[in-house]
Image 1: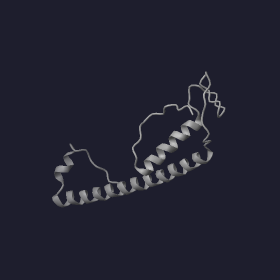
Image 2: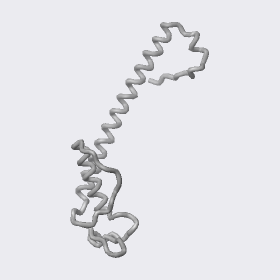
Image 3: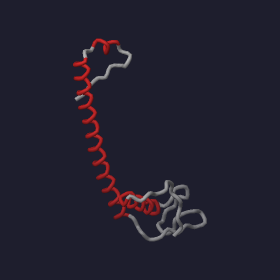
Image 4: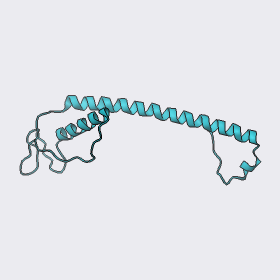
Length: 116
């Protein structure tokens, strides 16, 4: 159901009877409830996708510690990019944040490199 809302300044509103205004409000109320339900369904879908992605990352993640050489490369996982943190360290941080969110524990933003 799609209800077109005319601009507030539209003089057409002045020509509506009380009954017509009420009927329009009922339509908007229905459209609002449909939008809320659609939002809930989207949230549930994204939550399922995020949960599946976190499980997959957990399966692929190597839990052994990172150790960085003097260039900033992770020798523990063979990651040769100094500007981007080792994917296993990022996975560890992501999995911790995901677990905290599922437990309702607040977490800090950011992604500090953890050596070991």
